[in-house]
Image (cartoon, rainbow, N blue to C red; front, side, top):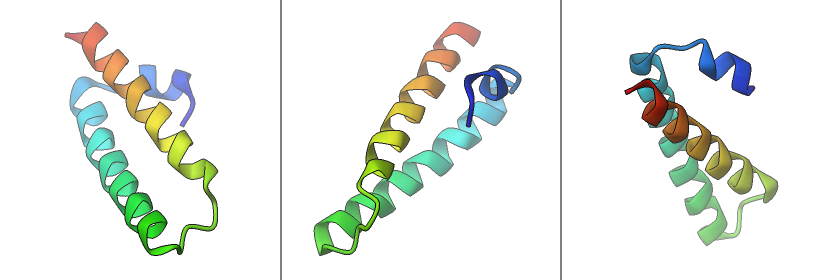
Length: 61
């Protein structure tokens, strides 16, 4: 998701998006551990998006 879209969301929406991202990150970690992860770049993408959401949550509070 782009930064402009994230900035338009409320704090509650960002928290919900954070939960989804954490679930996706967990799923990717399990795929990596079992050797089923095909797109290794997704791990990095999710980690960075979590950081973006955390930063926006900090500025909104």
